[in-house]
Structures are given as C-alpha cells and as structure tokens.
Image (tube, rainbow, N blue to C red; front, side, top):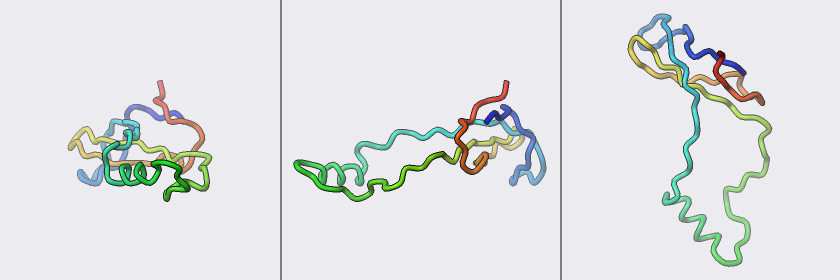
Length: 93
C-alpha cells in the first residue's frame, strides 16, 4: 500500500485541516530485562512444559500504523491504514 510522504488532513489540536508528515510505525525489540521476560525465562529453565502466553493462532496480516505529525503545531496522531492489510506500507514516489 503506497502512502504519500505528506498528507493534508484534520488536526485535532489546531481544529482545522493542515499538512502532516507521514512516518511509519516500527515496533522496537522487547526489553530483555523486563519482569515478564525474566519470569518466563525462569519457567523455561530445565525440562520445561508449556509457558503461559504462547500464541495459539497466527494472524495472517498486520494492522499497519503510521504516525502523522502536524507541520503547524507538531502534534502527532496515529492512523491505521486499511485495518488489516497484507501489503506492506511504503512511501509513494
């Protein structure tokens, strides 16, 4: 799915339409020292069985997010493009 680098859309803070820059949302890697990660590592030690939190169903597609930043007031809003799409988001040239 191709998205332009700038979109003219409504800004809730300015309360009017203005140009927004588009930046794609990328997920950061999980923290290795967080409480939940350490807990599951402890449970996995040795001959472990099933650990809580394993996904049962694999989803076919992702909800792809983009962050829209207003050029006037620099307020950021998240927007989901095409609720669940197989096509990866990319900039329109």
